[in-house]
Image (cartoon, rainbow, N blue to C red; front, top):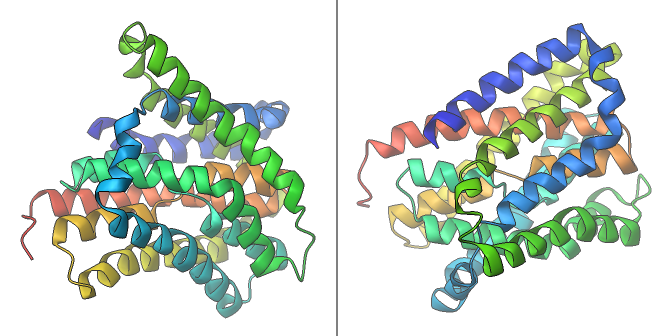
Length: 303
């Protein structure tokens, strides 16, 4: 798992460079973004068990806090950063979509490497993914709907198709045929990362003409969004008296988003430009997560 996390940002940067130099290789793949995201979510579903959700009843207060950080702090940060930096409307919409998205699947691996609470991480990712059906369209509309058309109903239906349906299907396959697929489960993390890398490359290819002008403000916004999410996700629970292991887990879950979903929705409902924040977030949050995991893995979990 550690090797996957290290190779992902390097591979994403390399494939993005190829896409920038030879966009014609990736432009025909643009319609496959939703399918690729569905593959990622099926991979998540096939690793889930009923115990992942029973955890909610054991520590409901911590789960509730994690979801508040996910769906209140992250979209609010995205909006504040967009306004402060004066981002163009479409880039603001893309960043807010990142903030309104559920936790990313890579957060579970980062949590494991950082010696966090993996069971809590998996539960939070699962719960935020299910809640995203309602929260992601609503929060996007709340923060940007006055300036740009946000099709709430259609976005809701698309999230059901590209997130919930594949996750549920993966869960059903795992429940009825988990042992038969045990060998293949180990392949899904690598397949998921390859799928996200390809999504990023497609977005880079589509945006090549204006990428030179947009790369700095978008990266700055993404860097601030991820960094403040990690800081808030750690220090808010810390101030509430939670132990370091829980604080690390909540920080990772808050700062690492399902940016693949943001890319897919932004590309469909706004524009390819709006998908840039999600694409860059996909690369950066794995780099920052790997750095944090390296630091935290060498430390204890004492307060």
